[in-house]
Image (cartoon, each protein chain N blue to C red):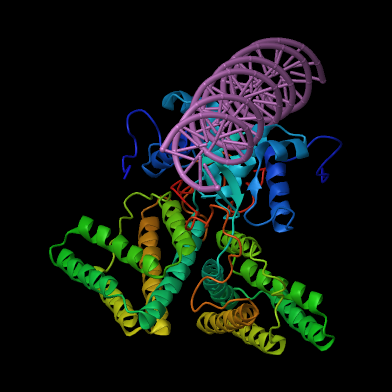
Length: 265
Length: 265
DNA sequence: CGAATGCATTTTGTCAACAATTAACATTTG
DNA sequence: CAAATGTTAATTGTTGACAAAATGCATTCG
């Protein structure tokens, strides 16, 4: 009953919330690029909304890590360094491993046949996608796989943080980087995780997840290294990503809990 | 140069930022209690600031998990259930374990004598605090210990999330609950972590951290159980914390990334 | 010719007022 | 008397306006 979300012209959530979602969408879709400045007035006009509402939306987006603000200068779409993306990788992996352990723990107490069969189905589909060389399908299934385990952990906060990290990592668009990953091995790693979960063995699940994460990171770093080799000049250990340095945002620290330190660039 | 933060009447960060800090402080200090409603006008008057500024500060606090908002109803200080605090515990532990592993990894590559000696000093002081039965000192040292390892991981984002979790967990003030923990064992667990870090053994550091976390969780649960036994009625598996149920906020889910689901209570 | 200074424009920070929604209370009605 | 309904007060959502700061550009001075 009353399942309609937008009856006629009325809105269900607040206007600022919708604006927030729209800004987030534009950033993740790449319509607003990394490093770009968010002009409050321009955004307000483009959405036919007052500037204050846009401002409120921007403020609520700061903690997500997608944008960074400098006092009296404005808000900018965050630009990630290679080091930061690596840190995000680590963090995401830690949460995933915890989630796998928690899911296994729950499975031991109260078996969830539905989840197990969903995981099995995912594995089957994934093998099929691999056999048919269907990259998009694999990509979707991979996301679904991690999502299922995060839900299985029954830890909404962890899932929220995890999803936030995934969004944040989307900011890092380096050319393709779409991965030349070893899908076969990735699938077998998934299988190990599922098996541990099925057994209800939390420690084994965590270990399997850690292996998966570590291997994934290694693949990522290798891809990055290959990409780096294509660059013009390969300085020994210099940060290889910043092309133009005409903007004053080097992503001031974590920017998560405290509001962005408005110190000098 | 220019190290003064508040020269005379001028402010360094934005007003909304100061208001945010003040609201956060009041919540963490317990001046605004769990479940309490945040009245925008009242807060604005108490800080001699406009309502819009308070509103902006509140919005920037939503993602921290300290408050929850319901559309057209207002913002409330989050009230944690036992299950949620357990989830936060899990998440915090996962991040801590990752941080220990990362610190060890860094230590293997580029030894940080300063950090190692600081850790050793912390252990020494902790043993002294234990011997002298100085609880407050132990408490501080314990926080400093975890803080050092989080910094050692050189992962600002992880530290930000971790610190946020710690703040969030402060919302859970159950009577004393100040812990009747086994300090001696906790210290020996710390020693194991430090040793693994010194060796630069990431896997061992992670394992030691996980053991520490797991033991800590167990201690916490036991304290909780003891506490629960003191309650009037001990229903089998009912949520034991909610005394009065006259408020419409059962802490709507994670409330982290998406803005608070404004659904029915 | 280049650097520094001053002015105008743009953009952000803050505020106060208006509109819309909710909660509480009084009233009516069965 | 209880449930439903209408009314009023309080609070939130949104907007536009004003003040302060920063950027860009032209001008001036060395």
